[in-house]
Length: 385
Image (spheres, rainbow, N blue to C red):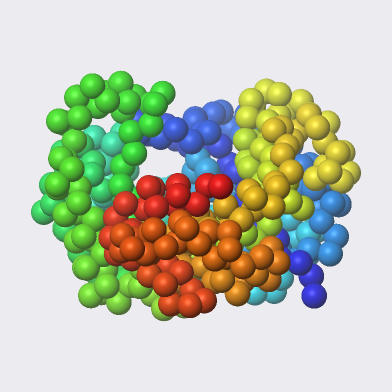
């Protein structure tokens, strides 16, 4: 009867930072990355001391490009996790990988330490679109990586795709979807490109949006994705995620349903014991922090912006995170968590959204309508009290 806990482990290194990326990541020398892994392992050991009574149900090793690390470094990280935390026997354990960064040796090491799911960052099956994004791999390199992963015995593989790219057309997006669906991955994440401030893309396209596909084309890409992947046997279980039945990403579902999680590593965010906080994001400062046992409670140098969520904030998150899932949110679960009737708290908002055909009410469940999904940012913002 251990409480469920998710772990996110951040590896902030990559071969080259993509022009659109605003994640905490970038290239580094082997000496720097190895020193980071040593500090990360110390953090893992210390955090484990504050998690007695918890059972880890999912682990997600993200980045950056975690697969850029040596096989032994990933093994050392996972060894530290298993020694420091109680990891459930059926835990979903994912590692992100970019094409061209995995070898047979690395894949064998992943399996040996219990990693059972791989998420490959393709983005596009069109080499020119990949070049426009600043990616350094080709579609052929992706195919070789995908084949290598399958031959190694991995039966749970996700592929990341991105639409509304510079130079992308509806026809080229359809081609990418078809090529990936033919490979039959268990999971597909399909996101629309976001132009983030502070990135090379922001400077390049913020003042010249005409260089990107127009809004009408972007909407056609969105509708094409939904219809085509459904035809191919993928169920849309979240706004941007599709999976074969039973192959949904448990780690992400945990985020959207309020499961506690610890972020380990540079800049990682956490939601633990009712608190939200983030780790130090400066690499030099992070590497100099002296980890302490029970860091989840006492290490103020590591954990920044700590905030205890109020009941109001917890209710807000229950609604606007839970409604990202196609199954919606349950009034029964709301009552169980908060000892309040969901309609007493959100009745006016729910009635307005239902009248405008933005949600579907099938008591006790409330979910987004197709129209509501189309303008989900607006709908979800309505649940801020």
